[in-house]
Image 1 (cartoon, rainbow, N blue to C red):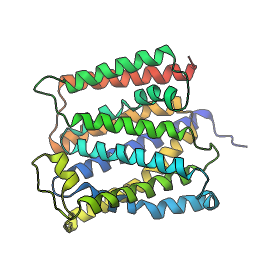
Image 2 (image 1 turned 45 degrees about the vertical axis):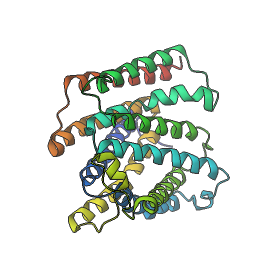
Image 3 (image 1 turned 135 degrees about the horizontal axis):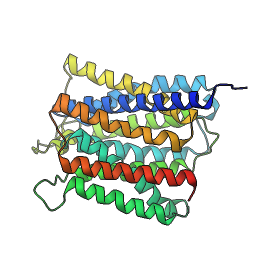
Image 4 (image 1 turned 30 degrees about the vertical axis):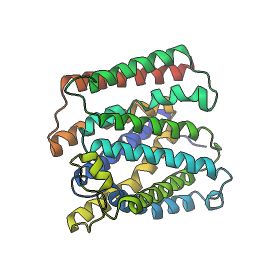
Length: 309
């Protein structure tokens, strides 16, 4: 029998999620740095291909090799493509807007999940959720300031990211709960790799002239041979990604999601840190206020979900 005290489980959960967030934002910072010279399909093909061996090893460790070719492969592929689209839109946004802005906008994902579940899987959405969704998107308006000179259309890409991630998370609820997490993770890594290889076939020949828009050029730039330090950063991002998923999975295994999920907001701290340290991006007051509104609405939603109201 497991005799580890509950508070020890929760401490492990919190530390695991915080570590996963550090790794995730570190990878985002690396990819944003590389976006000035390389195409996203080059960077992420290398990055996610490196996660495949470790993913297969985790499947082996969970003794789940026989579950790899599950009858739910259609849901796994669809979910994988949706989340891959989310990843693409986030990285294209991050090529232009400050990293902290992109991460804050990504945290609108729970509102998309709450809004989509009644249409995709038939769950009833309580009134309090609709109220927090509205409040959350007020925070987005404060951050992005549409209709003013401060508005950047690339911020809409980060919102699209949250939408597609949200759709992917809704489909996660359709998966067999007994399906090992390592199997789901390996399918996701495989879809990521194939997705970016397809983009490489479309854009990698460099047939599209530079537009001067950082986000668009990050997508359409042709493949070039990376310089050794940059190749090292791509490999580092891949190796870090190998550790992110196990930490994230461990966090949600050690404690209930209503306790664990708020620790994902520590990603904002690291996004601000990297933004200032590497890119010289200092959040203004509107960004800070909007991010606080989004985070507060998300935390309220989690609290009421815990009470099942």
